[in-house]
Length: 288
Image (tube, rainbow, N blue to C red; front, side):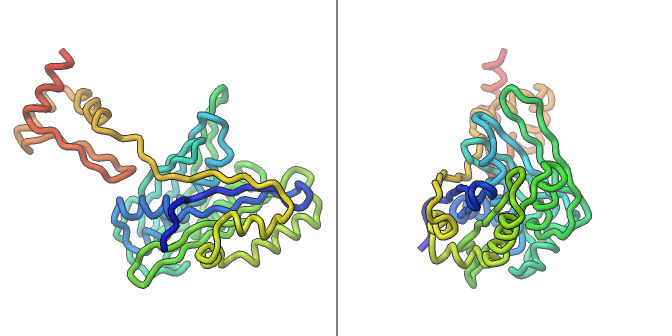
């Protein structure tokens, strides 16, 4: 049975030396996969990027937001995701129809490794932050580890993965992410590496238990926080109307003559908004 809620669960281990996060993103990522009608390879790459973007959102201050762009030159094209401090995410993969199988090789081929991972972060009372690192493998686990090392100078270990049904349905997706706190002891770093090695099968483990259960396994006495992750787009018919109003009237009339309607497409959630001649004319009359 499919889980009804995606979660980010965080705690500290090793006496506070290591930050531990366990993410179960199947429900939220699945909505994006279904909205964009993704083939297996595209879905796997998208779900992994979604999971790791959700992790980044978990560090945002209130009312903060960020965007992640993965541009590796692979068969799937760019992956673009946006999220906020409420852990509401949206986004797309440029080519949703890539079907190369379901293994790690498919992710690497879909993402590519000849390009960059870019994070743009904006928070209240702070200057925007832009971090960029070169991709190293295309499997995204290694690529986000490199991003944290270069752009944020943090030792990080990531195990992210996904499971699909024989019919191509996304059954589970998530990650274990460990990050060293400043001045962490060497034995704490070694323990983090050991956990990362033992949880490479995180997607299978999430099918058997939730993120909170796994976090409790790893931190029996630690204080655990859990937050919901959601797929949520900000588009609406009202915003689409504003986009139509931004057209020059002559341009709108030309589109109506050629197509009989004006269409506005949201790339983030694959929703189309259509405005016929009468409604389009009312929008322009209302703005006069």
